[in-house]
Image (cartoon, rainbow over the protein chains, first blue to last red):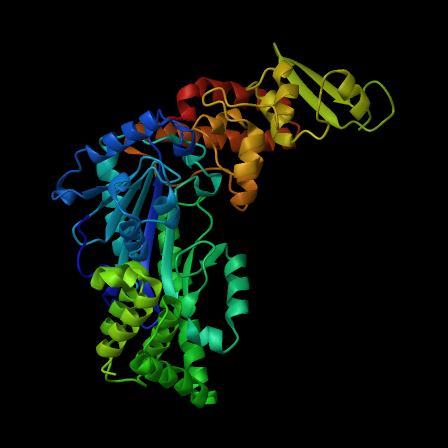
Length: 345
Length: 171
């Protein structure tokens, strides 16, 4: 399996002080087949063949690199999860399945996840329209070759009715330390729930918001158009959350600057001195360094470097840099060494 | 409203229009059970479905109690399995498990009951008929609510005239 050395996730995009990345996911199923869970392996393989051999047109002239998951190692699957190119569910599945990734790793297409197709784009910073356009291009390209299961009443038919309708999830990964440290997070979560938004942790459903990194996405997929959904996220939901987080940071800087400075500088000093580092601890500390950079408390470390380290300290990425790091204890040493050197400790 | 056969409150209401003749049936729980209606608290959508002739009366009672026993004819999934896993077996399940699945979707999707987003290119030709069908369904709801049964019958005929294609399922 060949992946880029640098994932697009390490880049810095618009509004990066709060918005780490923008993400779109489309759920589609091929007409004439049972959904994945009810299909036979022969049907799953047939769907895989239909999708991977479909002509995609000019927008995807270079095609996608298809990775048959049956031929990957656990560490390779973990690498794809860490880059958010596949879901944990997809990595752990034992069904015939494949993922297609484009050359810049902004688009990934999971075949035989919960639905036959999960078309996903991820881009750095706040750029939902661009991410949506890329996903839509692929959707339209594939639509020329494959009929999707669709009903005029329910829209795109999906295995789980919570995705039926437009089948679109619009999401952003947000860094919200200001709201957390000012004690506003519970209020934000309640408001999000009222607005039918899901707030999840670093790796999606059921995961912790390590480093105050939250994925925010729509819960509803029926009763509105894709463009309306995108517009509401682009013009209202995300700008409001960004403003709220920035206000919280400002308030914190004015009312409790020592607390803020302590968190930022303690994190930086620990990372520059530590000899043993777990991935979760490293993520939490790096997230506080990230906050310090965005609030101009730390000037000798770039946001790009922290973004890169946030990925490199994850287990599979670390193992890619240092093969001995697959052992947990050696991994802690390798992680501390990597971060210490990168931050000039 | 009282039961047609006793003084107890009616919990099952049926309106059947056949050959231009309207027949109303109102039954209490006991008499409904005696006549084979297995679930007394039938959702309005079922009565409506029967009213517009989408379901023959004889099937109504079967559809009222699909829960554990009902299976999708396309993939064999039992409704009870769906209730447990939350995952359907095939596109045909959407039709097979109506109207109960409709209520589940309505709850999960904050009251939404119709797709209004884009349509795949291969089905775009149907878009006008689909819009027309949705408009007629809304008008039919209003006519039934206002007890305008003749108008409702006319709307039902128009709906039937639109044909199966307007259902637009590609499953």
